[in-house]
Length: 380
Image (cartoon, rainbow, N blue to C red):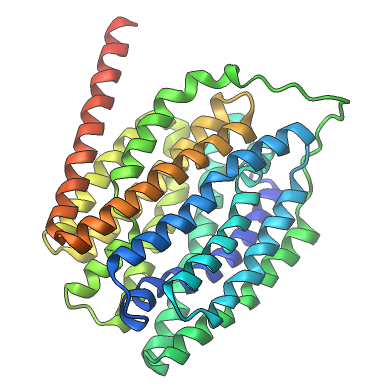
């Protein structure tokens, strides 16, 4: 049985990610083809937004552990995201888009580690995979709906500038609904009150190897925004691009709960290693023009890797909010620099060289990871 607070948080994420998908589904097209900026500029926007979104999660996760506050950070974070997405209506350059995306992603930074802490608290330890899987299912379900809204808007209203801007403006509605659900239907985590909280991060050093491997994959893996540009350059109409995002998110929605159950059954680390293989297969499919298959495989990688790493931390971390914050800070650094590098290789050298860079990098990380696991298993 899923706790009512986790169910409520599922709906909070559903509406928030509906609004997010209405933006992210069309933003790469908006930057590259409507504002007429290059793929390198898209890479900068991705990097700035991703860095802000993830880098500050460690700070707010640490503050949550230290001051024993969870819901306060959630409310602030979701409120920031709800009111800043519609402001993209006024963005007419890649710099203004980057600034607003950074501000909106700061809201995600405030809430993310504490959201995972709340789910971890209300989920039984032996069912963490199932509960994180349920939440991710709701999360991605919202993205499916948001991407469908973007598709119908572009298909029936056209691809003019005003259509993009009105989609951005409409994100205010689901954003406000998410904040109201959080305020009235989610309870705070009932910490035991203490005068002073001592946090010893050394207790969680044992998690570093698996986190570093994950960061390596994230650095070399192409962001889904690059997948969207590749789809457009493969001849798919702009109006139909959102349907690929629907496919990506629907794959995650369908598999999320099932993968959560598998995590509880065979272990988070095994599922994480399997997810890395799907990342590699997704890149290969995209490179050879199997666009639809590549989006499906990317969805499998995203949902299985994220559910696995979150569940692994839930089961093994002592200072959960701090470790979740460290996870997201690492993702910020590695995915941001990865987006900049891949975007510039794509823009100034070639699309093919960008794929080669990504493919070889992931292969190297996988070889190191599986070699390490082999020697650990052999010596244990």
